[in-house]
Length: 468
Image 1 (cartoon, rainbow, N blue to C red):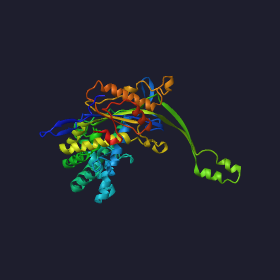
Image 2 (spheres, helix red, strand yellow):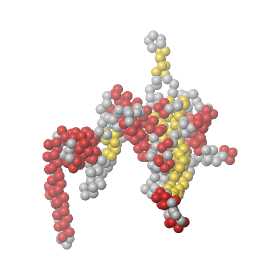
Image 3 (cartoon, helix red, strand yellow):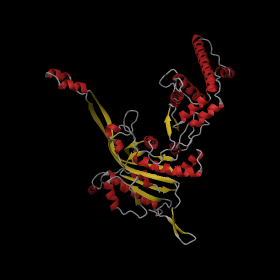
Image 4 (cartoon, rainbow, N blue to C red):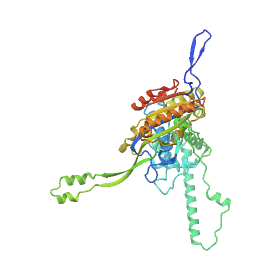
């Protein structure tokens, strides 16, 4: 491996020897090996484990979407709880319920009637360009069509503006709702006329007639600007990290994410089990236990419910990249000066690494304890471009005994392959630097001690030490 983890040194004007850190590369690449047993972190529409074919065999897969959400929520929860590198920083929330959030804020913080608050918040956000669910269906009427990733205080900011301009906004709202009602009545009349006169040829509306029929009073510019500003990414650090795309409002800023995440997959062929389960009915068992004769007991025999669940086991490889340049650009665009953006970017990098190592998708977490897993190995290094080492596992690991040509347990075999692959690439790429390893597995720790690791590679004991 190339040795660029050491610091540069210089002499000052008085001859004192100074040690300076080398400039950091644009990309931080993270690679991880982890072993999971009898879990189901993510599933398809049929409740089955997700998979892909790679190297000619089927592998289990944990999608990047599941990984990214787990990491993002892990970092947000730590920040909101006042822990971690991003404590006290603004974070985002991804939801379809922003109208409900703003309505509740109007009700609880400003004393508005619930119906008045919700109708006003929905109308204001709809007129800003967001599409909502069918108003006839209560379950979706006040939900936006798409998830919106915005700073957590967006609802409070929208509510505050509505209160500050309540007279103007409510006058507009009444006119807007009245116009909507007229449009709906006109549509019903036309539908009825078409159904009544099906035999008659249908006469198309002229553009002018159509425009008059759908005219809605425009939202006051100041209010629309306030909604767009509230929903804008602003200084939410997780939006700067993971990005967002909101196509419904063309003039609402989107963000290119600074984090790239690959799908995790098993380094060996997929192994799936169909677990048959029987759930007991407590009341039924109590009656059986207290039955006076065997006939009464027989009536209460059998399980309360039975079924099957698919579970997977295996050793996974997963990979993610942080683009430090993009992260700083996103923070500067959010309004931070260079010094603040640099500080926040450094904090965000440490928190991202922590989340990559510790976060885990929460599907079936109670019945499988999957969120308690820790990686066997984490490999972190810098480079001038992203590096994905998936090809190290294109040939599936053969877990057969070493004596018969196998590679032994998949965990240690995957670690050997990953380090050998990285060493090989490092000899041919001059930009790889500051290579660090972290393990939570004592067997892997012994293995690292047996391998001939170059001096440029350092083994650290904490996730936060994986970044320079």
